[in-house]
Length: 260
Length: 271
Ligand SMILES: Nc1ncnc2c1ncn2[C@@H]1O[C@H](COP(=O)(O)OP(=O)(O)OP(=O)(O)O)[C@@H](O)[C@H]1O
Ligand SMILES: [Mg+2]
Image 1: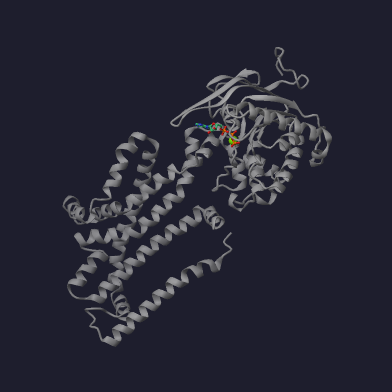
Image 2 (image 1 turned 180 degrees about the vertical axis):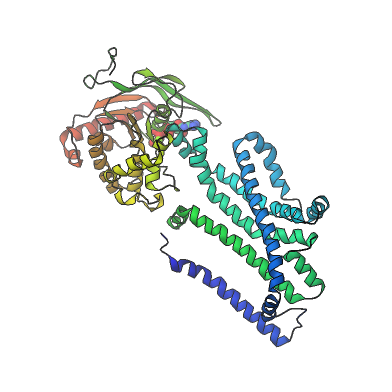
C-alpha cells in the first residue's frame, strides 16, 4: 500500500531546497553588507540565539504549544458538534449558520483585549482566541462534508432497511471525514497565529510574549528564534493532521490518483 | 407455501407470485411541472423467475424499481410482495441501483457486507459469509482492495455481491451492465447467467438493451415511452443453461425482432 517511498521525497525536496537557498542568500547578504544584528540578524546569528536561549525558549514554546493544542482540540469538538447540528436541523441551519459565517468578519485582534478583561492573564483567553481562529474552517468544511453525502448512496442504504442513525454512521459521517480533515489542516496552520495574538495582547509567558519582550530590547535574533519555533510548531501540527489523514483515509489517495 | 386463490395470469406452472404490481401509476409534481412517469403498470414476477423490463431511456424504468424497493410510493395502484399488499417495502428486496454506489472508504469485502451489517449481522460473521462468495464473483484477490482500484466489471460484480448477500427473495437490478464496454458487458452477462443457475433467485432486471433482455430472461416485458406502461409480455423460449451462442439461433433472432417492433410501435404511439 505504501509503495511510493520516493513520492514524498520528491514532494519535499523542492520546498526544502528553496528554503535552504533562501537562507544561504540571506546569510550572504547580511555578511556582505555588514547589516547590524539588531536590524537583521544573519541565519547563523538566529541559530546561535536558539542555542544560547534554548532552555528559555523551550519553556515558552511549551506554553504556546499547550494553548495551541487545547484551542485546536476544542475547536475540533465544537466545530463538529455545531456542524452536526446544522446538518441535522433546518432550524439550526437557518439561525446559526449565518452567524457562524458572520462571526468570521469580526476582527479577532479587537476581541482579544476584551477576553483579557473577562478572563484574566492566564491560559483561558489564549485558548479562546485559538478556538476563534480554528472554529470557522472546521465547521464550514464539516457542514459541506455532511451535505456532500451522495443522495443515491443514502437511498441505497434506505432500500436495505437502514434507519437514520445507520445512514448517519455508515454514509454521512464517513463522507464528511475528508472535509473535516481539510478543515482541520487549515485550522492547524492558523492555530499558532491565534496563540501568538492571544499572547501579544497580554501574557507573562509563551513565544508571543518572548517576541514582544525581545523586540522591545532590540534583541532581533531572539525574535527570529521565536518566529522559527512558532513556524515549526505550526508545521508539526499540520503534519500531524496530514498523518492522521493518511491513517484514517487510505482510500483517499487512491481516489485522487484515479482522478488524475 | 401458503395456498392462494387462482390468479389471472398462471404463466410459469404453479409458481407463487413474488411481486405483483396492479395499476401502478406515478406522477412527479416538481418545480418544473408535472411529469407522469408511469401509467397503470400491471406486472407479476413469479418465484424463481428472471424477468427483464426493456424500455426506452426515460420511460420510467428506474422509477418503477424505486417504487418496488420502497424508496418511493406510487401515486396510485397496489404493490404486492408474496401475495400480500406491501405498503412499507424498505429492506424487503435487494436493490442494485443504476450506479454501483460502492462506498469509496470501504474495502470490497466491507462494501459487500453493507446489507448484512444493516440487518444486524455481526461483522465477523458477515465478513465470513462474504469471503466465501468472493471467488464466485471473481473477487477472490480483492477482498481488501478499495473500489478505486477495481475495473468497471469488478465494481459491478462487487455491487452484485452486495445485492445478493442479504438473501432477499427478490433482486431488483437497474441496468447493471449499462455503463460497461461491449466486451466486458458480454462477459458479465454470461457470468450472470451462470450465477443465476446457481442461485435461482427471483430477479427483476431493467435494461434498455433488447439483446441483453432476451439472452438473460425467462420473460421480457416491454415498456412504452413515458408515461411507462407494459405494452408486451413475451416469454423467452430459449433453453437453459444458456450462453452467448444463443444470440445466433433463429428463436433468438425472431424474438429480438418482435420485441424491437413492439418497442418501436410504443414509440410511434406516444410520439
Ligand atoms: N424525482 C423526480 N422528480 C421529477 N421527475 C422525475 C423524478 N424522477 C424521475 N423523473 C422523471 O421521470 C421520468 C422517468 O425517469 P426514470 O429515471 O424512471 O427513467 P428510466 O427509464 O430509468 O431512464 P434511463 O433509461 O435513462 O435510466 C423521466 O422523465 C424523469 O425526468
Ligand atoms: Mg434508469
